Image (cartoon, rainbow, N blue to C red):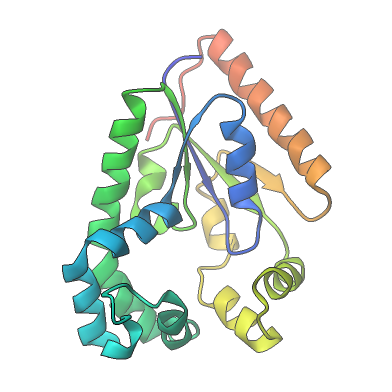
Length: 209
């Protein structure tokens, strides 16, 4: 297969990261935007201090690391606070993701970008194909409560803090519905991969970005 960047996105608890891991098993390098953000908070102390100045120094541990749980409690469900955080973080995060993509492509020509904010960060225009992993709100609510130990209200605030699925689906080239079993998710990823190989064999170029 020719050089390829697949974007995988979906709202919280949709299963996008599991989808990205399954694609990684097909022979793609994986760039996990959330992992990149974790690393960014670790080495960009100036950014962490800016966040502390905006939201209070109690969101910064004594070792200079960011207390993401505390920060999350201050921004989820509060659009103005989330917007303020995004204004601080997004420019640095975009640059860090782009650098990780460049470094990964030096080693492998097929890559998966796993990011909940692909559309919001502008990366929908930088990937060859965008895969949207979809699941209904009640399904995602139960998953989020079970995996994170959140109350229903806490989980719902996180869900409602994101742009609704409907406004993102228009950007997708492929949609994977993930509301049942891991086996069915894997079957859909297999079918997606077969489709990508068939397009590549036919000499079909990815969509214009």
